[in-house]
Amino acid sequence: MATTKNWSPELEGLRGAASLWVFLGHIALLVNCKIPIIAVPKLGVDLFILLSGYLMTKNYIERQTKEPWGQWQTIKTFWLRRYFRIAPLYYVLLFVALLAGHYLGDMREIIAGAFPSTATETSRYSDISFFNVLAHLTFTFGDLPQYAYNTALPDWSIGLEMQYYVLFPFIMLLTLRLGFALAMVTLMIFVLAGRYLLPDLYTAFPMPSMILIKLHIFIAGMLMAEAVRQRRLLFIALALLAPVVSAMMNIRMDSMQVFIEALMILGMTGVLWPWQQQNLMQRLFSLLRAVLCHRFFTWLGDVSYSVYLLHLLVVMPVIGLLLKYAHLATHGSGVRYLITIGLCFPVVYLLATVLHRVIEMRGIAFGKRVIQNGNKAEKALNLP
Image 1 (cartoon, rainbow, N blue to C red):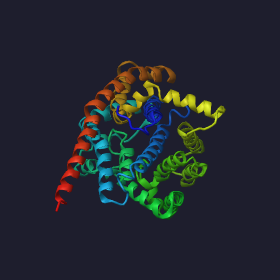
Image 2: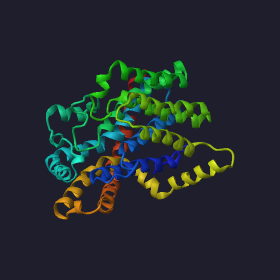
Image 3: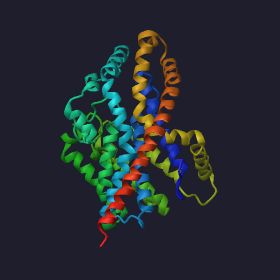
Image 4: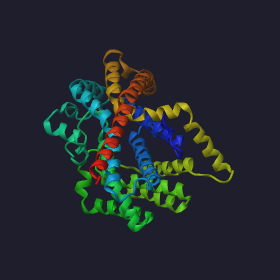
């Protein structure tokens, strides 16, 4: 994996931990194994969101001298980079998910029959209507309640991420006008006000796929990036406003989940903080950083996007078949959880490794060529 001078390998490890959390959490939910924290995969998604806010801000600031924020070329290049990072793999697995929609729905019905608390509307898996497909191909589905949660993929967060990418360059321009801290706090107040001024909009979505529901978590990641860059505790304090906003918005978040959000912010900042003094906190976070920088975790990070998009396409059939032919439901919750992990982990991570190399990396490389050729063409057209 190519690295840059300012690249932090622990970020890759954190991304790998987030994808593993979502993977393990969905298995826990589907086999009805009530493991505290782990069985809440949406918290793993929140960790992804924090990382996204952090990385986008860190990279955008580091490129500022070469890519000035106010230039249209910079904004266009940013959007193209993000599109070619997300879209190629997404389109491939979206096609697979829609093609296998009826089968996945059948497997999901078997799971719901054994564990009624896991039931969901499975007809959405096989919706190949024109508008559903168009909404997903254009990444607008996250803004449309009827399509935001309408495939077998956990892609509601992909639509959310794309909305953030659209807004991000303009958020950074806002920081130039208002200052970083004031801009971030203003945006948090804005999304919180929207929750009370437009309550039906916020509650219309079956999953928090609309950007206003989760923008404050992205902002917390952005504040963490500035905290680490400037070594200022003020930005950490402001980032901790995000769990407060989550609590006040009261959208499918209990007090324990809000508390875990705060711990994630503090823990991630501690891992990335440029500690100057040797003390107990520094030693603890250095140990955690060393674990996250281990080859295993960085590999988890490399394949994290593939794992995130792919895993349910493997996990649901495996559990459904185990319930149908191996009487998985007769085992205790812990046993069926471990059996499912043992079968799914090697399959998911092997396939994800292949997808990462064959599709993700090639998609990124193709995107770079598109950007370079576009820049050359624009320069040629501007020649006197």
